[in-house]
Image (cartoon, rainbow, N blue to C red; front, side):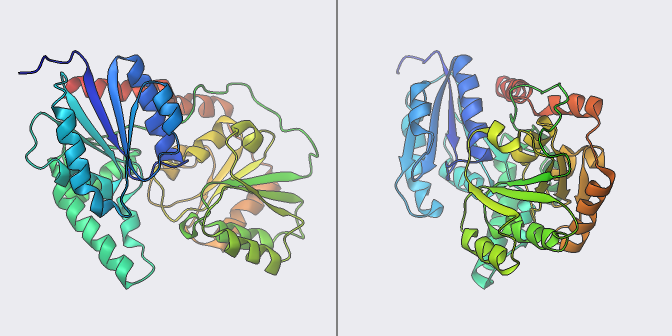
Length: 372
């Protein structure tokens, strides 16, 4: 028998390891656990955008060369079996998002000596949204499999209370908790007065440019008030909907007010000295950008979509919300913001933001790992 390894092993499985909230959360947690003397391996399907950084801090990185997640099952199982031979004190597999959780469960079938943790960083309610018949069938299949496989995990961790209750009620999963993502390093406690032209309101969107993010909904609302109110709207992000958004801006003659900025990593450049942040998603996990807006003292308006939006704005105490995919309702809320010159209540903001700090989130994960 091989000698027992003195470390505990964490294997993260995140199929799409690109820039974004889920990847950043896993990277932050990995760095924290490395410092707690855990051995970390990360598995993605295709390229891992954080590969060089992760290797630098002492993680192992594996990139499965498959075109689809479904085709990765046998490769993932092989990697896990090889890892189990290293004889760590404990081995945990932490998978991220619904289809990855299903693949992880199948890949670990009848494997002994491994603890399985499913994390849900999106919302399973998104599976009710589809663009075509094939998409409908795929989503229904994922929902059906998740309903059966989620019970096989040692524990399920969600990003929001909403998703915890959704899975608990729909899937009859009992061992489930929520841990907010490690979005911010520290709470910005100073009230930052936005500089520049007081009459000009600087509005921003931050996120992926995809249909379900609702950028067109924001543009529709703003196009109807462009002559009444003095504002600029900056869109930070990239994605498949960029050309559609560009065409809409031209069609509505918004090019003097709306600017596509692309992807920015520097949060200061995005949020500093801005007035209003708008999230119009059809569904969410728990959006980091919405948390950052509060931390930079930027007033938020968000859709009341399935997921964590409503929790971030403390059920309306720290922002406004509107009916999902409803530009008319969003327009009303933007006008309300302008007319009342709405500001965030500072004491409530500071206390609430403690829930989204790296230290709080990472410590909760650490506690879970010690308990199972």
